[in-house]
Length: 169
Figure 1 (spheres, one colour):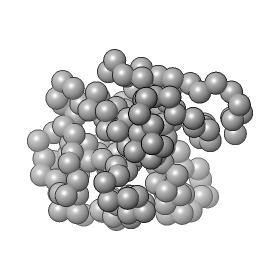
Figure 2 (cartoon, rainbow, N blue to C red):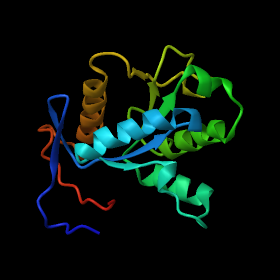
Figure 3 (tube, rainbow, N blue to C red):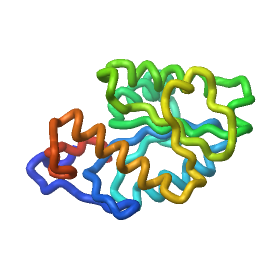
């Protein structure tokens, strides 16, 4: 665990500064290559990420996934034409991600659908506004959503001056 007295690391992505965020990324195995690209981009910019790739042999994948979703500041649900058409445990993971976000206030942001292509949004995610990853300002829109939510959570008017203890590595 990192030292809570250590200075907060700041990152810059799409021209905006952000504190160390914990982001869980949910992707069907068909979209894992795209998920890994996002993880590389985010980690390069000091955003802490969790994907199913973090699971170790012998771990209870269901418990670890639920824990990661609960502890994450945000959950990105990657969706594509291929992933939304398949029947798999991926659909259950989407519901688990939504359940993890159900503890936030009504106006809060936790789960964000990320459309990788011009796909239909799964029914369970239709009430949540998504970001289209192929659009020019997609990463900026994510940072702004994260900033808005952090301001709401911590009543901070001066983003990113938010005290936060990093607990993920």
